[in-house]
View 1 (tube, rainbow, N blue to C red):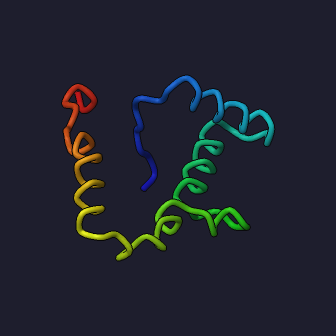
View 2: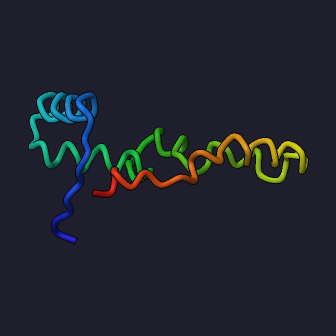
Length: 87
């Protein structure tokens, strides 16, 4: 894929991308790609071991049914789609 449009950058994320671009002497586009790769766990180095998706693996199968129900209830709000965010 050559091009992808991403909307909704918050000020702190934009500032982080600009700082990275300035520090590394790269374009804003390259800085964004580096941050995306890092966040996706595609970077080389030690940070790869701590990517999202593996940090909670130790909890798989460890909850009782009551604990699982409690977690499901606590997370129920995240199942709601904010239609305004997709406009």
